[in-house]
Length: 108
Image (tube, rainbow, N blue to C red; front, side, top):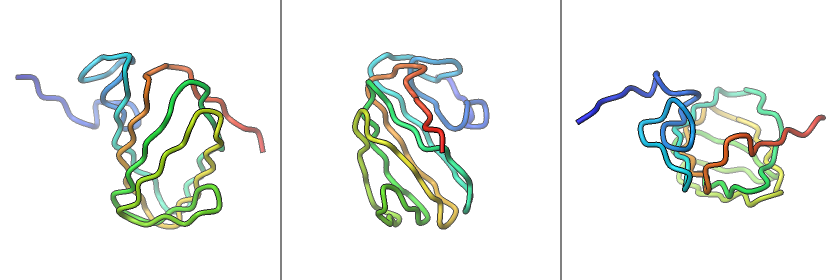
Protein backbone atom coordinates (compact mmCIF):
# COMPACT_ATOMS: atom_id res chain seq x y z
CA UNK A 1 0.00 0.00 0.00
CA UNK A 2 1.15 3.52 -0.81
CA UNK A 3 -0.30 6.66 0.77
CA UNK A 4 -0.03 10.17 -0.66
CA UNK A 5 -1.60 13.48 0.31
CA UNK A 6 -3.54 15.81 -1.97
CA UNK A 7 -1.23 18.62 -0.83
CA UNK A 8 1.62 16.79 -2.59
CA UNK A 9 -0.19 17.03 -5.93
CA UNK A 10 -0.24 19.99 -8.35
CA UNK A 11 -3.44 22.08 -8.05
CA UNK A 12 -5.37 18.96 -6.95
CA UNK A 13 -4.60 16.77 -10.00
CA UNK A 14 -3.68 13.31 -8.74
CA UNK A 15 -4.17 10.80 -11.62
CA UNK A 16 -2.87 11.25 -15.16
CA UNK A 17 0.12 11.43 -17.46
CA UNK A 18 2.07 13.94 -15.33
CA UNK A 19 4.21 14.23 -12.22
CA UNK A 20 3.42 14.12 -9.41
CA UNK A 21 0.70 11.53 -9.88
CA UNK A 22 -0.49 8.67 -7.68
CA UNK A 23 -1.35 6.67 -10.81
CA UNK A 24 0.25 7.50 -14.14
CA UNK A 25 -1.92 6.87 -17.23
CA UNK A 26 -2.46 8.41 -20.66
CA UNK A 27 -6.13 7.38 -20.60
CA UNK A 28 -7.53 10.02 -18.24
CA UNK A 29 -6.82 12.60 -15.54
CA UNK A 30 -8.57 13.05 -12.21
CA UNK A 31 -8.40 16.10 -9.99
CA UNK A 32 -10.01 17.49 -6.86
CA UNK A 33 -10.12 21.23 -7.52
CA UNK A 34 -10.91 23.99 -5.05
CA UNK A 35 -11.72 27.51 -6.27
CA UNK A 36 -12.42 30.49 -4.02
CA UNK A 37 -15.35 32.83 -4.53
CA UNK A 38 -14.40 35.47 -7.10
CA UNK A 39 -11.24 33.64 -8.19
CA UNK A 40 -10.31 34.49 -11.76
CA UNK A 41 -9.85 31.48 -14.04
CA UNK A 42 -8.77 32.39 -17.54
CA UNK A 43 -11.14 31.22 -20.28
CA UNK A 44 -9.62 28.23 -22.04
CA UNK A 45 -10.32 25.20 -24.20
CA UNK A 46 -8.82 21.80 -24.94
CA UNK A 47 -8.23 20.37 -28.39
CA UNK A 48 -8.04 16.67 -27.50
CA UNK A 49 -9.57 16.28 -24.06
CA UNK A 50 -13.18 16.05 -22.94
CA UNK A 51 -13.62 17.33 -19.38
CA UNK A 52 -16.29 15.92 -17.07
CA UNK A 53 -16.91 18.07 -13.99
CA UNK A 54 -18.85 17.24 -10.83
CA UNK A 55 -19.57 20.30 -8.68
CA UNK A 56 -19.44 18.94 -5.14
CA UNK A 57 -19.87 22.20 -3.25
CA UNK A 58 -20.66 25.82 -4.09
CA UNK A 59 -22.17 27.78 -6.93
CA UNK A 60 -20.54 28.80 -10.17
CA UNK A 61 -21.40 30.11 -13.58
CA UNK A 62 -20.00 28.74 -16.84
CA UNK A 63 -21.13 29.42 -20.41
CA UNK A 64 -23.88 31.69 -19.03
CA UNK A 65 -25.35 28.83 -16.96
CA UNK A 66 -25.50 28.91 -13.17
CA UNK A 67 -24.57 25.60 -11.56
CA UNK A 68 -25.04 24.38 -8.00
CA UNK A 69 -23.70 21.50 -5.91
CA UNK A 70 -24.70 18.20 -7.46
CA UNK A 71 -24.51 19.40 -11.06
CA UNK A 72 -22.37 17.45 -13.53
CA UNK A 73 -21.28 19.24 -16.68
CA UNK A 74 -19.19 18.21 -19.66
CA UNK A 75 -16.91 20.48 -21.68
CA UNK A 76 -16.08 19.04 -25.09
CA UNK A 77 -12.96 19.67 -27.24
CA UNK A 78 -12.81 23.23 -28.64
CA UNK A 79 -15.61 24.34 -26.29
CA UNK A 80 -14.52 27.39 -24.31
CA UNK A 81 -14.70 27.13 -20.53
CA UNK A 82 -15.15 30.51 -18.83
CA UNK A 83 -15.92 29.78 -15.16
CA UNK A 84 -17.05 32.38 -12.65
CA UNK A 85 -17.01 31.25 -9.02
CA UNK A 86 -20.03 32.73 -7.22
CA UNK A 87 -19.21 30.87 -3.98
CA UNK A 88 -16.26 28.79 -2.84
CA UNK A 89 -16.37 25.68 -5.04
CA UNK A 90 -15.09 22.12 -4.88
CA UNK A 91 -15.07 19.96 -8.01
CA UNK A 92 -14.03 16.50 -9.08
CA UNK A 93 -12.76 16.76 -12.65
CA UNK A 94 -12.05 13.91 -15.06
CA UNK A 95 -10.36 14.65 -18.38
CA UNK A 96 -9.90 12.09 -21.10
CA UNK A 97 -7.39 11.45 -22.53
CA UNK A 98 -4.54 12.73 -20.36
CA UNK A 99 -2.59 15.02 -22.67
CA UNK A 100 -0.23 17.42 -20.86
CA UNK A 101 -0.18 20.80 -22.55
CA UNK A 102 -3.69 20.45 -24.05
CA UNK A 103 -4.93 23.69 -22.50
CA UNK A 104 -5.23 26.82 -24.59
CA UNK A 105 -5.95 30.11 -22.83
CA UNK A 106 -8.14 32.74 -24.47
CA UNK A 107 -6.89 36.30 -24.13
CA UNK A 108 -9.59 38.68 -22.97
